[in-house]
Image (tube, rainbow, N blue to C red; front, top):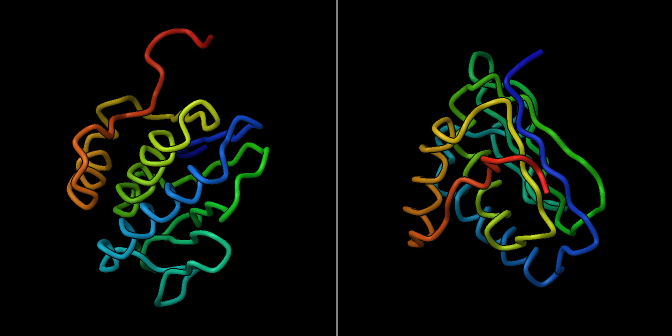
Length: 140
C-alpha cells in the first residue's frame, strides 16, 4: 500500500468545464517539466489528456492519467509522495475547482499534504481561489 490520491467523475461533470480544467492542468505540467516524465520516457504526454510521472529511476512511481474527456469512473494514482506528487495534487485541486460537483477527490494524505500542490496551481494559474479539494467532514 502506498500514498495514493483518488478521484471520481460523475454525470454532473460538465464537458466544457472539464476542458477548462484540463487546459489549466496542462499549464501546470508545462511549468513543472523539470520534475516530470511520461511512462518512463523523457517527455510528458498530452495525447488523450494528461499522462505524467516522476523522472526515473528514483522519482517515478505510478503514472498519473487524467483523461481528456470526463468518464464516469474512479481513478487513482500512487505517487509515494515523490516529487511529482506536487503536480498531481495541483491538477486534482484544479479539476475539483473547475468541474466542482462532478469531480470528487480523496487522498491518503491530509489537507496539509496538498499545500505545495495548491500553491503551485495558484502560482502558475494566477488564481488564489484554488484550494485543497479534500472534504474535511463526513461525506454527504
